[in-house]
Each structure stands twice: as structure tokens, then as C-alpha cells.
Length: 298
Image (cartoon, rainbow, N blue to C red; front, side, top):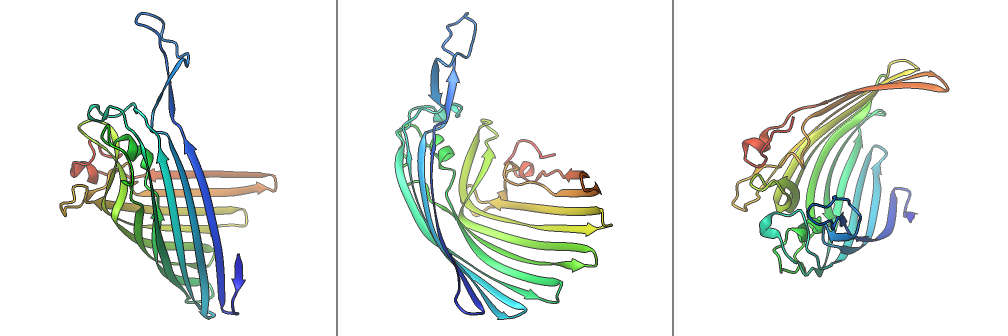
């Protein structure tokens, strides 16, 4: 719902609700030794623990026009979630984690807020800065898979709360539209995926974490028929997986290296358009050098 409280103050109020169920079954064959191994679907096992999830959120977001060229945005959000993880004996887990898991239940809630400002330097150029908190549910299905056999998951899954800071500029210069933004984010209990070099299995790591990066995008109208767009994105991060105060590079499963993309769109006629793009993805060896990954990302 949208309200114009005053000529300068606009307010949005809303709520959202979501329910989700998942049962990841693996179909296997029961053929005896020596018999043809047909996957006849005669037997199934749980690939991951089955789960049910409900989420509920309330939010209020407002914009206040201090002057025609200066605006402040602020918002507040409340999130609640509860989950049920069923009993299972997952497959494709490292040998120490093999065994029955009783499952369990849990819930969590929290408030998060954001505040930001936009200033119009001119009719075509604006600068902005913001702080925002993110509240999200961890990947509890994977967490439940790797919990020790015989251990329940009752209330072990804390939400992921992230503090994010962003500054940037966007505008138009001659026939080019452009934007640039840089960000820094940190969490006392982040979430990232990585591969255990000793077992080769993936896992979810919850630990202090920080991420940072930038993104640049532009679009140029070369002619009335030809547009050329460019994007450059880079991000990186570290976490303290051992909680010893030493931050190491995040796995390349969670962080993409420098990505550059150039795209051209040509409108031949009202019924025909041609497009082409070039993508460059750089290599990343930080996680390999820190012993987090066993291979570099290339």
C-alpha cells in the first residue's frame, strides 16, 4: 500500500508470506550383483533431509524530499520464519557424517532497517549513499545434511544478518548513460559454500564474513539503430572460518572474479534486431593461496 502522507513524504507499507516444502528423493536400482543395472525406480532414498519452511514479513519504506534535489529513504522490516526438518539418512556425505538424522524444528525472527540519501548534482547526474541490513534464512537443508548423525537440528540455525554500505554515482553524459557503485558488507555470522580439500565434499560455513566490490555499467546510443553497453563487476571477500581472528579468502564457489561484458544491439528494421556480446571472466587464486580451495578459478 502506498500513501502520500504529505507532498514531501511518501510511505509504502506491506507484508509477505511464503511457504515451501521440499523432498529431494534419489531414485536408485535394486538390481542384484551381476544383473543389468536398470534404474527402475523401485527404491528411493533421501538425497537431502526433507523440510517445510514458512516465512512472514512486515515492512515500511518511506521517501522524504528534503529539497527538489535531495531525498532521504528509510525503512524498517520485521521477519519471522519457522521450519521443520524431517528424519533422514542422507547420501553423498563424507563418511564421518553417514548415519541417521532425527531432524527437528526451529524458528527465528528479527528487525532490520535501511537508510540512504540521493543528491542530484545536476539534471543528469546523481550521487547516492546507503546503509542497509539484510535478514535472510541460512541454507538449512545443507546444514541439516552435515549435522552429526543422531543430532537434532532444533534451533541450531541462526539467521544471516548482514550490514551493507554502498556509495555510487549515476547519470548521463552526452549519449551515454552510466552508473558506478561500490559496496562493503559484513556479518558476525555469515554463510558461504566451500569444498573441503580433504574429502572433496561441499559444505556451508557459518562464521564472521566480509564482502566488498564494485560495479560499473554504461549504455551508449552510437546511432539511432546501434546501442553499445558495457559492464564491469568485481567482488571479493574473506571469512574467519576457524573463529581465530584470521580472515582467509572466500571459496571461489561463493565469489566470482572480475567480469567484463560488452554487448552491441543493432536494430536493422522494425522486425529484425541483431545482438552480440563478448564476456571476459578473470582468474582468481586467492582461495587457493590461502588453502581454502584445492584449485584456482580460471
